Image (cartoon, rainbow, N blue to C red; front, side):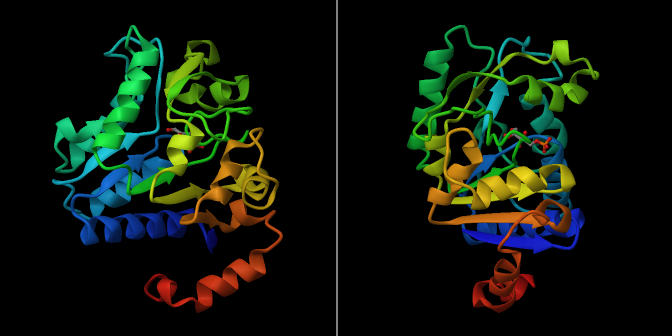
Length: 258
Ligand code: F6R
């Protein structure tokens, strides 16, 4: 794992956008794993501004709410349309999210896994992190081997996401269909982005704490090709910051990004 600290959120977001652009430029048929949430809105704005050619890419989102009507604006499908898909040249039929509206959620989950596999797997998976340590909607106690499935959301997560439901926590769905931790770990590369002081404690737990299903994001320590990009505020509780900065300042692979 590498941890890159940038001076502020704008620089952290810009670095993530540059990394993704380089992956798509190198491999125009790249299979992208995408995330939602407030942190990612700025990443999508940057990717759009860069005018990247996504016409041959496929995408798979991490998660989708369960129980909302297909036209509900709280759906992550709507979020992705609004912030990204409608603004780039990706083929709509190549954009995928778990089907949280399906009658048979178990079937929808296994179909999603099969679709990822038949697309050759995810080349690069973008991740945010929840304050309780989830990646996707893998709430505490999600098995590190877990696959796509329906998961009950914690009160903390529902509160965190209430803003997208007019500020009313009761309107936030109580379940979501999410890629499992095991599904996420199969992506060829992981890029986790966290910004702001509110994420400092959980970033330190995920990166430097024990690997535990109580903090799903700690499973990224098992991945051989994982980058964690943080701003200074989110990096504040990392013990090894000095060394991580040294790696970024000295390793040749980072020369063009310094
Ligand atoms: C959403 C997702 C979540 C978010 C996380 C952070 O698709 O996967 O894990 O990335 O909840 O959300 P924000 O950026 O709103 O703090």
